Length: 200
Image (cartoon, rainbow, N blue to C red; front, side):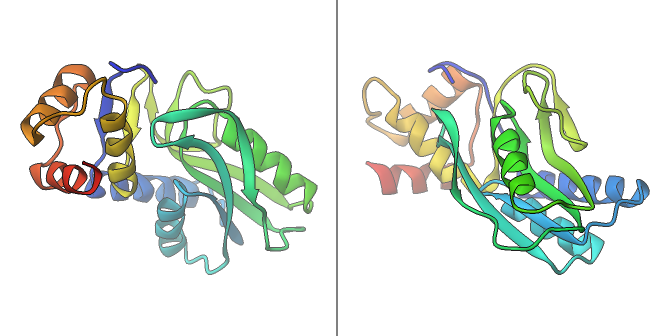
């Protein structure tokens, strides 16, 4: 991500609506997972919502590190492995976004090395067309690349944007102006106050 890349802030309501849309798509496709595996950290909340919609009680988490805030590492790395037995089961692997596709590639390889699922499907709230991997299900497609800020990562992402500024802003107003000018991003004032108070 460059210093002037466009960002989009997703609200809690919108993210829930996207998870609902995914759930209904899975239901209408007659794919009923026996276990859902979330790619942590971004996939955890969407996975829990889909568990609720589809009445799935078996939820596991694997952690893959690729981004810290808006800063991308060179490679996606599996940090915490699968703990569940997925052999013979219908598995849904979910993340919040398919951005480069690297996290899905690493996750799928890891799952297949740890059991042979009866069926394996993938899902994401957002699929960016620049991604090398296309999930089986996604709620929204992103044709024009932008950095997506989810409500569960807003503090982390805004801290990263703050730290990437050439000079620290003197006021919250300066930070808000920077976000609008450089990233076409408008953030609730309370959130800006929180980021400013916890970062400066």
